[in-house]
Length: 336
Length: 285
Image (cartoon, rainbow over all chains, first blue to last red; front, side):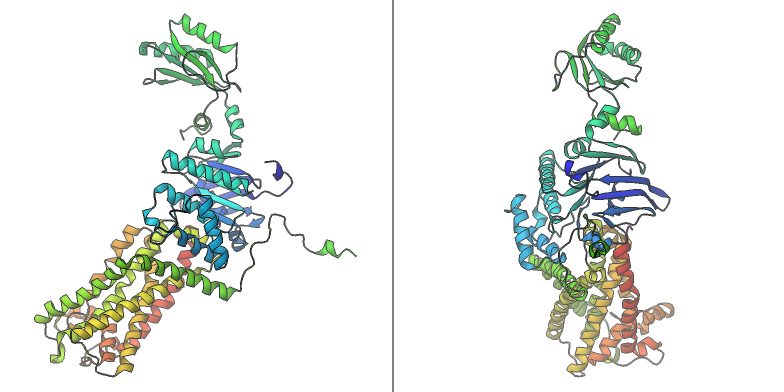
């Protein structure tokens, strides 16, 4: 975001290494998050996302490298860092046997807000994030989504400047997930810097200003969601009416693009990611129209002709931006 | 005159956080807040208080009358008078279980992580919970004393010594809670902690709590006589005035049970309180 250019980054990590026994969780991670932005740390299980967040949130010490959060060293000034951050881990860290409001008040007391200020802040958060009605019920009776929401606002009780969210929506149904997304978007309006980890590509796509792709303890790519997609070209999808044409269509696509087509036998679809740079989505044929269609005269007619020559009669030929799944597959060689 | 240039330039990112009270006040407040967490939990779960009371009280009545019908207490005294101080000890020792499970649960569910990302005193965090447990234990002990008196148990050596006996029991409980915190973090998962906690039962059984050690086979008798549980039970019996006195062949701890009990409690505290705090603050670091 534009305000960030001349102020120091909210998070700056340099060459972080961390080893647990024989596992090398981090092998030299660099990370810069400008103040007031949302950074999505994206990667498969075991990529090192959680370890990186734990180091930045002062829960773990790096074996090598250093990190500053809000301008403060996470090892040497850990207590100062703790006064400026909020942390929400993978599990809802709440006391089940007390009410939602009491959970917030206890945390407010631990931050030494003072009784009245803590009560006011708790009321404010409960109201803002629509937990007002459930506030005086025991957390034990909350739904998964409500727990997650309460857990999230529990880390906001002190108005932290930097918020760490470790997989904030894992295991939630789509509706609760949307509610959490909405909550996170509201936070960034207040100028809070957010670092979130996720395995969900659409989550990073939806929320993050910048995405950092982590795999096997190193950063494999970073940039805006748009740029990441652009780096790997576009995706051509051919949908057929008839399963027996699948091999011929795959062969034609392979010859035409030089890529490795993937056959989806259920959908009768052959898809290939091209190595070229593409920015626009193009369609020909019926069915799968999408936003942002624009003509791309060169490839598609040629492709349709080639398919025709191979005796394949496609229902639909589409050219579109790759999903982040494909970006991920391309860059890490493994499905997310 | 460029004094301004000499003063350190504050990092713009390191903006002021809320003003903080002094260190001691902060720690006291943190400890109280975490004690409050436990007490609020009990407040919302009256059933839990009921269960905490029911188990030891049932034990008292059932063992007192079932075993009491067959077992001869030493010196011809009433069996329930012999058993009750032992049960007090057993309940204090069992305190290790809930604190183990609680510590493992906090770890499992991310509560420990959340607390550790906050600027709170680590020792105060655990101390608060230990003190809250102590308060709950005192209530349970008071109820047990009440039921004990109802089924015929009496103190024979004055209220002062009886109070000292109860204080000794609470000290033991307090020490066991720290052992529990440490063991709980070591277990790391709630289920493991719950299973490991069951080991407390055999330790309680191989002692003089239920039966005098005199009739046990030699090797078992040696274990039972050196078992700290026997030592504490002997200390309580002596302070409540029920004691027949140690057998002449008793090892030192049984011959000097009060001193030995104090020694055990202090040892547990000195070893496990720092270990528990250390484990709590560095787990996964």
